[in-house]
Length: 261
Image (tube, one colour):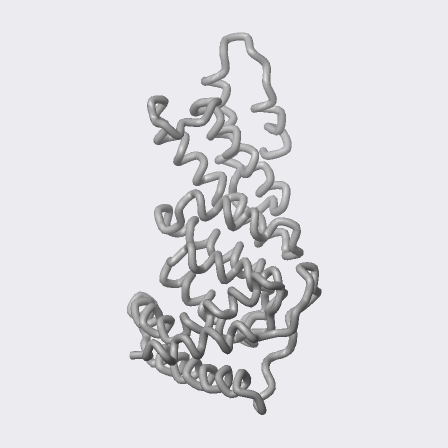
């Protein structure tokens, strides 16, 4: 159990981390020098982190690791809160502790926390641990999309939308971004299937609004990666939209039929 004093000390030292940089800084400052109290704090936490990583490697079950990660993350929470506060002031350093906690938070599905860490890491161009060969925007977008595609209820719809906004404009392989658009297409389709016109949050366009969003994302996924597996989604969505269209009304629901066959 970390004492209140140690939590405060970690948070204050983390708040001092990095060198002031503008929002458009190309990268975070280097990791902390070991000859300062800040650097010594960071080094001690890195030792704890790597002890944790070794302990996790001894657990064969991925499912069993996640509650352990939740407990481990509590050790680093005060430091990370200080790092995030420093980030709000335009300060950041490369931080292995924050990046690993981002990875863990996705694994144990604390979405608000994961996206807070992701926003900081992306803003300051933090790098992944050596074992990962993707940028953080690519990792966040692709892994959360894959989880949503593999387990439909694992990722809330709002989280997928926030992830898309977070990674927008960042370079990554087209197939990685296509997965996120596919996940959004499937999520909007599920919303259309569950549509309740009496609900307070029902969109102005009704069920068709959800279907149109789903179709847009499915087409974008296909555009980015023609082998992503959304051709049947596109056909089904176009058919569903035609059924909802007023008799004699035109539209573009079927304009891409040839392209996606």
